[in-house]
Structures are given as C-alpha cells and as structure tokens.
Length: 271
Ligand SMILES: [Zn+2]
Image 1 (tube, protein in one colour):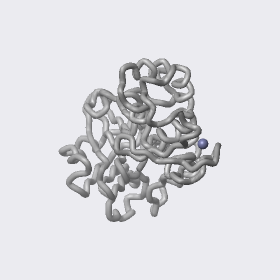
Image 2 (cartoon, rainbow, N blue to C red):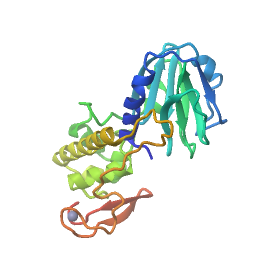
Image 3 (cartoon, protein in one colour):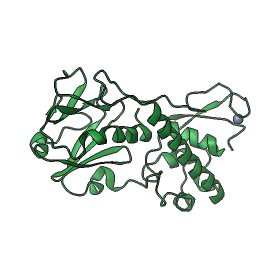
Image 4 (cartoon, rainbow, N blue to C red):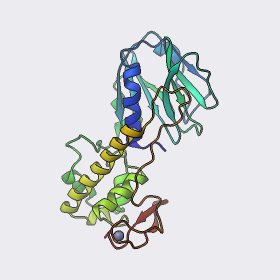
C-alpha cells in the first residue's frame, strides 16, 4: 500500500510533467473507485492549467484555476505519465490528458479516489479534520504529542496511527518508529513522558525521511510505458520480521495485535 513516502515521491515524479500544463480532457473508464467520480469531471478540467501539485497526508492535490482535483492512491493505486498513443490496460481507470501526454491512474483494487473541490481543498470533509504533517512542520513536536495524549486511553501505536493526531503514519512506519524509539507499541499513549515523546518525534521523522531518500534513489521513472507501481522496497527493521532476530539484541521479534493490526516488536528493546 502506498504510504506517505510513496505518495510524496509520486508527487515529485508527476509534478514536472503536469505543472503549468493545460488539461485537454479527462477520460474515466470505470463507474467508481472508492467513491463515484465527480459528475461532468472532464468539462470541469478541460482548458484549465495545473497551477500546483501539492500533497496533504496521502492526498494529492492538483490545483487548477477552476478548482482542485484530489487523488488518493488507496491500497494499490499508482500514477504515471505516458504518451496519449499508449493503449489503456486493465485497471487503468482514469486519464488526465495534456496534449500529447497524459497522466494515468492504475488501481487494481479500486480503493483509490478521484474527487473534485471548488474552493479551498483544506476545507474538504476528508481533509478538514486531519492532524499535522509529520515532516518539515514545526507544529509536529513532542509538546504537541504529549499534550494531545493527555487522558487518551489508547496504545501509543494506535495514537500515532490516528490521522487526527498526525497524518501519514501507517502500520509500517508506526512499527519502525516505535522500535527506533524503544517504545513498546502497546504502552498507553498517556503514560509516555515528554522526553520519550521527543525521542519518538525524531524517530518518526527519521524513518519517514530515510524512506523518502531511499525512494528517491530507487523509484523508477514515472514515464516508463510499462511502468507499474514504482513503490520501493523498504528497509525494515521490525515490520514483517516476526520471529526473526532483533538487530540490536538478537532475541526473536514478537507479534501482538493492536487495534486489529499486527505489531511486530522486540520485548527486550521496547518498553
Ligand atoms: Zn531487541
């Protein structure tokens, strides 16, 4: 599943190909993804230029002078840039056409979304209640998390995976950041000191930045015609490694269920 680093790498990959380009039309090949496509989408877009390609949480925001196209990649979505002569394959559900090039959305599981908002995208119902971004954002700090955690009766793992607390931390990065910070994933969010939240904030930012760097170097070209999800393999220390030795103490990593999600952790290194 595309996580925040993949969505940001996708944003950087498509931006130079579509920003300041005028949209000729849009083609929709399915009745709905997670939600139905906006009505008369092609006429809303045709003739308008893409002014910016931004990201909020895992939403891509393609802003035109007529409104903003919101794209979510869901569980399996990917975007690429190809020539208009490239035939659409199975699961190629949406094209945004710019003269001789187009941006194509491929999404086998159809959990993605293409939405339209006329005014400020930050006020869209899906975006309005989102917490702060974890990277390059001074609002996301230990004081904020500590204050937010007061009287919360949930585990630290569920706490940092809650998009109202902080966006973009899925199961992979929550597991990795808690391991890096030495915090047991089931520990109550309200029973973690400010000092430990400082360590955790650094750990979250570090695992996400490393993934971005790694993705930037390994992600393949967004313009390859046979391109399929260019998602990079993560270098993971705990996620998906249940039963394998901890890289620090060599004891086997354990798994527990927290909020229906499997959490792999080291019972010796994480307290
Ligand atoms: Zn260990």
